[in-house]
Amino acid sequence: MNQNKHRFSPLMMAICVVIGILIGTFYANHFSGNRLSIINSSSNKLNNLLHIINDQYVDTVNVNDLVEKAMPQILAELDPHSVYISAKDVQQANDDLRGSFSGVGIEFTIRQDTLHVQQVISNGPAERAGVIAGDKIVMVDDKPFTGKTLTNEEAMHRLKGPKDTKVKLGILRYGETKVRSITVTRGEVPTKSVTATYMLDSKTGYIRIKNFGENTYPELLIALAKLSQESFQSLCIDLRGNTGGYLQSAVQIANEFLPKNRLIVYTQGRKSPRQEYRSDGRGSYQHIPLIILIDETSASASEILAGAIQDNDRGTIIGRRSFGKGLVQQPIAFGDQSMIRLTIARYYSPSGRCIQKPYTAGENKDYEEDILARYEHGEFFSGDSIKHEGKEYHTANGRPVYGGGGITPDIFVPEDTTNVTSYYKQASMSGQIIMFAYSYTDENRQKLSQIDGVNDMANYLKRQNIVDKFATYAEKNGLKRRNLMIQRSYKLLERFIISRIIYNMMKEEAWIEYLNSDDPAITETLRIMQEGKAFPPSVASTSRMAKKSW
Image: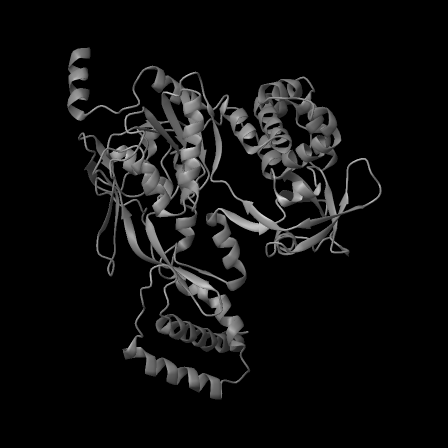
């Protein structure tokens, strides 16, 4: 064992050498055209060592495979967000932000070794060909498409493809025993960033942004135009769960709400001079009352937008402290179509605070478990538990804000765990609720399809004794029935189950609207709007109000 261990060490050193040479000599910057210089002082030594290993190492080494495995490890030694993306994963990584991809246009889940069509994208290739929600895809191009080897990656590989190419699907429809054949011509399938737009009440509009991609800003303008038709007078932008994306999209959106020449964000790094992004005064919604919702999963571009609104005292931030991702990555492509995203600078909010939370280079485990540490520390339940490790900064009106990682909301909304039981945790984390919702939807699709509207759907499902049906289903699948715990968590279970059935039957917006109907952050948003407090006061006015109250 010790001999193998000693033999492995120089092999890993060889890998590091190879990677160092690849990174050091690569010069093409895919986005900005910058060039990386060859590190001349080390290149001769590294090249010599590489030749020695190639000529004299005891075993044959597949350098390409080893480099692929070692690249992520090398970049992880720098910071938590410098990453390597293999050639096969680049397309997927870009599709997430590009705003579209070429494929058949379905959302699916794999259940019992079979691909189930969960949603069919409106006016997409699959819908035009006749695929409907609830279909099972059991064959692709006359080859079986079921079994233990069926994974999400394999499904996407088989279903995605160049525009105008054809794929033949073998469909097993509910209630039928014969497989029907449907040929789909692949096409551009849009991926929406703005996933919900509707009125919370007669005056307050609501927009949920899932991520910041190429088309997020125009999607936002369309959403605002839709709300304008409903005469909205105030706005809530929901960034909870939004892990970020393109800086430019966040800047464009912030610009819509800020007066002229307000600092939105700036970046700065060792080799990256300070670059400022300011508003141009052309925004159409500079005076509308504005609230931004964030939580511990709001990151990067989400934090840029929230920080710009908060530091300029333009609106109120509600929720829980955001993730704290404030490192700027530069995409750099390699000749084999793989790429790295290398951190070159940091983001700073207008007040000067760094958005990035602390980290130790090469020790990503603690960084990745920071959210769990916050939870255990009590930060999700009490705003007083938030630890500000940075110094105090001040907004445009003089209000104190803090650095040290993430954006701390102006109004804290705790996570409600009052009726959470071990049964509920097992039911949700094991996937049993989602699986039950799929089965229930398939078995009742015809009846459910006749119900219009989120409220009507929710009210119908509440009359179906849905929690008891789930408990029976779950017990058959290994989750022991615990009646006292079920009773205590009844509302949570019912809410989760109904939300998933609504998601299966309706669009994502309906699912979000249902969950928002009793969401504490939404309730707080409406209270603040009704009291006219969406614009944060200055320190001076706060002081005057305090004296007056005495």
